[in-house]
Length: 389
Image 1 (cartoon, rainbow, N blue to C red):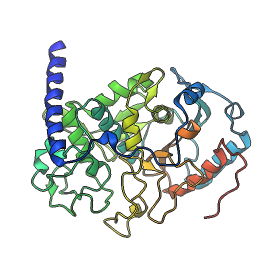
Image 2: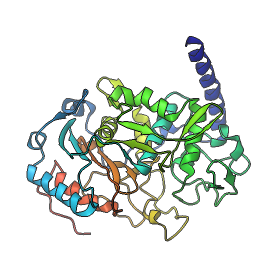
Image 3: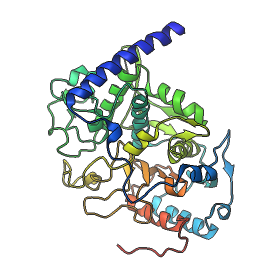
Image 4: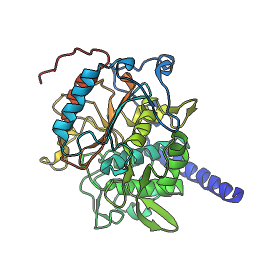
């Protein structure tokens, strides 16, 4: 075991040196000095937030809504709204957490479910862990670990892949590149390039992303293998490659209570009890908008045309959309979310010490529908009237 650890440490040091040289050659400034959270929405002081936050043991602690500053009738109205707009699964897999207490959970909150593109936020977390280790940075070029893309994509970075701005095109296999659709950074195209990012990070980690996640995040925060499974996209060179896009067979399947733990770690700035599991540097960077509002969508009529300006490193954010509006005007500006097809979502609202999870495989709705939930659950202004857009 010690020989394996020594060998892996040596590989990490070698990769780190190559990564730093490559990053310097790009002429980019260090990621640490780039903009952090959205202006105008300062965090509460850490000591103030810590005083109000608790962390679950084997099970979540349960509290009444009123004890955590939420009126029960408003919680009931928020749940009724979700049942109305979400479809047949309604609130069966909903969990609402405030200050570390579960205020409400659905009857099927412990059943694992494929969460589709929420997988991308787990992928982003893996990037953050490797960044913390000094193995990668967002500006690292993907071709360092995927030499097969070097011909067409020599300057594509991990951040390009995590923000859908790489221009990457592929054959039937996402790992087999085709000529680019556009130059890096020139457009936004929500696509399967997340599988390419997953492959690059797997090579960088020298282990599966599922193993990395459970070792560094899942086990410390109480997510078990029964709670979550990350599907394997393929096996190559003795490594299991988990999918990054979230499609069946390669995506994350997780239950709502475990997803709430993941969200609560993010709400706590990456700290679980007295241990920092992932850096606040990563969270500040990844959950702030990393795409410009005027970035053109690759397909002008695609569903993702509203994402430029409010997409981070594989996290949805509450930044301004291309039309200048925010998707969730009743939520704090720094609200962010893991979002997946078929109405799967984990909202993280650090300013409110709140996490809202809704899982299901029913109708596809406009994500703006959740703004009514924020209006009703706003603990800072429980009588706020609905805004007219």
